[in-house]
Image (tube, rainbow, N blue to C red; front, side):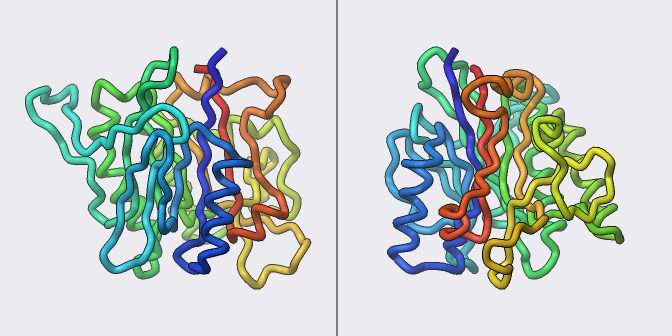
Length: 274
């Protein structure tokens, strides 16, 4: 078995730019979460890593959306040819800056390359829905390319379909757009591995949400229920999630005090047998 772990984490460095905190956050990601590949949002000062990084930055904000490799090597993926036109390449760069970064992960011993996408639902200025829909549209050619079988997408979408109301229905439709590309929502896929989220307002009998976000004013030590971060994978990769009876669960929710101390989001980590 070759275990490949993919983490997603909003590092909160758009807000907390204290050098000590930024250094501690990167150190925690590398040394404790210890993923093969990290999909990060609101990142600043991305350090050098063995496999390199690919970053998308907006001129109007002081943060980046990035793919960072701790093993293997990254090849930035800027354009692809599709099944509709092998002679024409379609650009994958984001229409809304910093909403996604795309890289191919290569040179992992014994592992066929795969594509990693870090995605961010920018509140630009208010509607994260707009940026996410445009990011999905930007990525459609990727899912019509020769690379379509092995893709992981993760990030802070600023999306929660939990409370009732128009936003709930809109986000559910947006999640269906992800599924229309052949992506599996890994939180849904692994929902039976954990109990329903206590206090979740979704009201669903098979609640799949997990707490990934806590507001700065959230009471210390009190669990919350906001689910804004997600991991998706194509079926070929989703079927290779390491089973629950291994050392690690198939999808790790890093609901840990030390992670919350560094960011208002906690990491999600998927482990694949590739």
